[in-house]
Length: 181
Image (cartoon, rainbow, N blue to C red):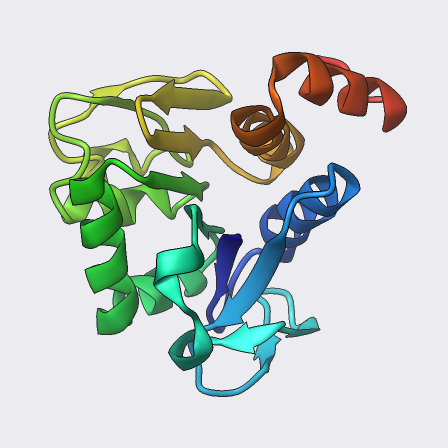
């Protein structure tokens, strides 16, 4: 299972694009609310109903954690101590962690990006502490995947699909949704 986390103020395009692409690919991706309630309001006032609550996740069955950006969503994800514990545990175990837009800064401030290549939303690169900053739309460095923002949500989602289904499958999916760079 892939777990994508929703906090109040998340960027809905970054969250739902990833969910859409993963589900088109037949991947088990679940949206997880960190608020204690299934309904979560996005940064643009859209109510999204999560599949489950954080306290109901069996992390032993989760293969990847995904953090969408948005403000204050990114800060709300970072303020969630149980989520941060899981991010650090996944990193220590070399399990997949992914973040887009402002959310890679959560990894930076947690010391996870030391010596790794990463990207994030423009002008937030100072919070990618210890990282080799990239301006590519999507950056994969080992088990860590980062991306720059709403405009890179499709390449980010396709990179996640590629991790689980291979690049050829992701390329075919890109064609099916009429996406090209």
